[in-house]
Image (cartoon, rainbow, N blue to C red; front, top):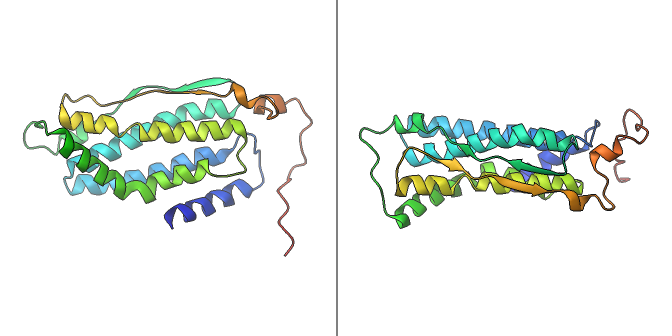
Amino acid sequence: MKKTLWLFALMLVLSACGNKQNLPIIDATLIGVKGITQAVNVREVQQKDLVGCYVTAAIITGLDSAQLTVDTWTQGEQKTGVIPMVNVDISACNALLEEPLKPIIPEKAEFQVRETVGALEPLVFAGLEALVGIAELDCRNRVIADGTLQYIRGSIQPVIDELIKPDGIMTIPAVTLDMKDCKEGMPMPSEKASTPAPAPCECPKCPAS
């Protein structure tokens, strides 16, 4: 149900008039998901939930990193791109500890983290999955959306690793996207820029009722 609501909201944004080559829907989705995750992070800190704090801090860091790089891709300036490796600042989470974090067995770490992620699934990941599923996205931006989802999901394993072997360092791995295959029959935004500009407002026509 939550994924359906996300999809409906994203379709409303996509159907609005504007420069669809830049697809602000990707940026808007990242902002929306980040806002939800920040609210959850505040609650986890208040409840002194270390695992919940770690997970939400990692997702927020991933969203920030993705948003910084997605903007350059949507301008059509690159055929390839990398959402870079980034370290997560977990100092606020570790401040919840009364004593240094002790390692826990892998099975317990996996269970605790996946349980937290499961609670976030309909609120956070459903929004990113709904974005990938929008039929109106062109090839290039679908690759960007899918890569962003992979990147954010990649922020979860570092949390598990930190619980198993605490060292105060949590790193989200980079994700590389290759968009050159989208060129054939699917013009890049940069290629479209040389064609005459469309009328000020060319929204898709709604089906006749």
